Length: 346
Image (cartoon, rainbow, N blue to C red; front, top):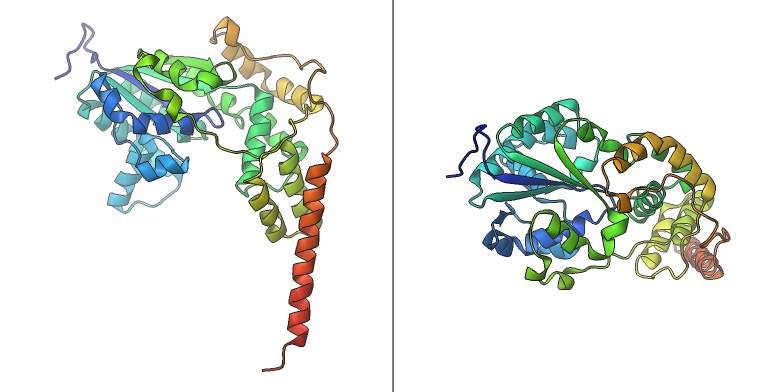
């Protein structure tokens, strides 16, 4: 049985990893699941690790959402993620913590980075902190890099058909980018600890292990490194152009199939006008986070120098692939049309 301190609060420490978008959440969650037994041996419970097939696929969502979805399936509950969160989050956290045999509990959920941190959810976390030592760990990153990365990911998954410049307005909204979504937590009085992903990304796993009081040297974390091939800015731009010019989702999907397995060899360009708009829109959030972040990890609050890839001309090899795919698509349509005309009447 877990003891309590003088204030009647359980001595259990509970780390809640709020997995913000594009900050290595899936890589961390894969590591937690694969090393759940070793974590338990070291006094850290990671309840309900995700299955090996999920870990291998690289689409981990964390144990909190996994447990909630299992509960909902048993109850026959089918609704939005917000409704799922409203109904199951608090019971899921409470049960997972109380059932853990270890003195430290680790919970993770990428869904927290969505628009699900409503006031009543924050209030539930505050209530939980009255019974357990709750520590919320968050990773943030440079707003410009985040916006570009998020946009490329949306193009890669077929959810985006607009160029980055047209998507900028929604990214400038305070609550649209992940850092802005932290504001309810930062103002809650909870123990919220923030790290800059850009500063620790090359040693993400050991940095996180250190945050929860574990020695990285106790784990074979280097074997856990994964490389999730992403689109380059120019590849994503070519896909968006293909959709806009042809109006064919089949055409853009064909390009995506090629780019998903072809590493982009050209660095993403730096777009200072987009950077300036994001910095201006996100300044209150950046200022708030910089008061919490370590001095060496503070977020950039001024536009970058002109150093780096500033050429905004699409590389020739990307243009060549775009044109080649156009030709192949047109030839395919021509062959289909000829076959249709030549076919004898039934």
